[in-house]
Amino acid sequence: MNKFKHMLQYQFQKAEKVFWHDRLLEKTILRFIPKYIVPNYVTLFRFFATPFVVILMLTESYKIGLIAFLLVAFTDALDGAMARTRDQVTEWGKVYDPLADKILIGSMVFIIVLRYIDLWTSLLVIGMEIIIIVVAWIRKREGKEIQANVWGKIKMHLQVYGVAILLLSVIYDWGALLPFASGTLYMAIVFAVISLLTHGI
Image (cartoon, rainbow, N blue to C red):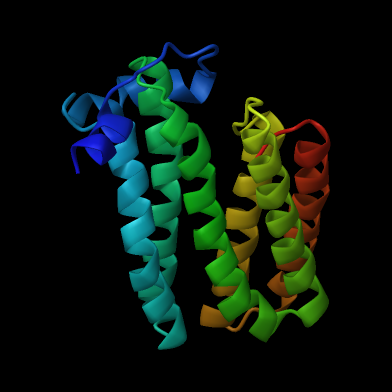
C-alpha cells in the first residue's frame, strides 16, 4: 500500500512544457482544487467513474450519461493541467493517465458507436487504441520514454466530441448529426496514426 501511494503521490517531476489551456485551467478551476489532491488521484477517479458511465449507457440513460461522460472526460484535462502547472508529473501518470482515457473511450465505442454507427468504425477506433497500448508497452519494456503527445491529445478530444455528437443525435433523434459524429471519429483515427508514428500515446 505504501509503495502504491509512493507511485501516486511522490517522485514528482517538473513539466517540460505547459500549454495555454493549462494556464487557463490554473487561473479558473484549479484554484478551487486543494494542493493535497494530486493529479494521479484525479486519474484514479476516472478509472473508478468509468464503470458508472458504462452502466448509464447500457441502461440507455443517455441524457444523464452524456453529462457524466463529459464530466469524466474533462478530468483528463484537469489532471494534465494540475501535473504541468504544479510540477507534479510522475512516471505513473504518464502511463496510466492515457490508459484511463482509452478505457473510457473504448467503453463508449463498444456500447454506443457499435450500436448507432457501424462495426468498422468501432473496430478501427478500438484497434488503433490497442496497437498504441501494445507499442507503448514494448517501448516501456525497452526503457524508452512513453507519454501522451499533442497528437494523442487531439485524438482524445476528437473521440470525446465524436461520442458526444453521437449521443446528442440519439437523444434528440437528430439523424443529420450522425455523419458529423462518424466523420469526427474518423478524424480521431487519423490523429491516432500520427500519434503512433510520433511515439505518443
